[in-house]
Image 1 (cartoon, rainbow, N blue to C red):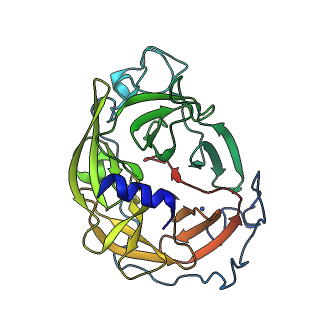
Image 2: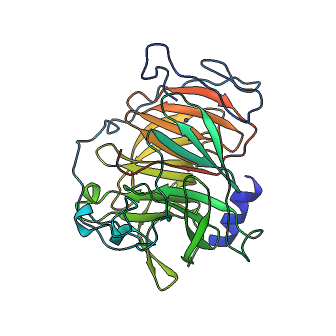
Length: 332
């Protein structure tokens, strides 16, 4: 257990073996140290692919977008976009400012350390720094980003230990949305169709596996507990949910050493099925997905992909970064 996980406990009591092209992907990582590509192994004990697959881990049916609420929830484009920035007014924290909040790049997942935002192209697997999180005056040295989440419009949200943020995906400039009532080491948007509710939900995941709906009002963030991962499971640090694909999380299981990738009931956070394990990786704090792939970003610097349908783990790179989180749009 590292100081980050211990801090959270005290506070609360990325790639497929085949790419889209026939020539395969590229593991160019900048900056990197000891890049490891393809079937290379990590560490003295090696890196053994997992063949564990959950019976319920198949990709779900495709679904359509629904209407949603303001700020912590999104609304359909018919509601208007008066600043013409591509984000509907009711989903836009700054509906009269066309320069904010920015929109996440296509074919891209985002990952981060405690203080720096990165992009990873899902076709080339190239990792590139966006820049250090640029917090407003008074917060420059105190904030550490524990996780990020991207809504269906491409708005990038983040949580530090004490606050909820929106950050520009191309500049990493961040704006404070509110004070958190608790600490969360995971963050994800859940599509409304996935919960049969007609509204997308912003979910914070507590260190103990608690699954909380976050809502913003007047500079404060309320957290409503919907459930948890269940007995014997705690949060390893991240979750993601994509419309038509499903909701997944990296978890710790009692008496198990390696992290588990599990399919989650988005309504309650309950664990439904085991997708696979990640032998040799114990701090998979960043998780994102794309079609039939799950990208894992470990605090050791490793980036891997876990096959959504077969649970196979493929190493992609060994970087010098201590990954703290990752995010992907909730609708591809």
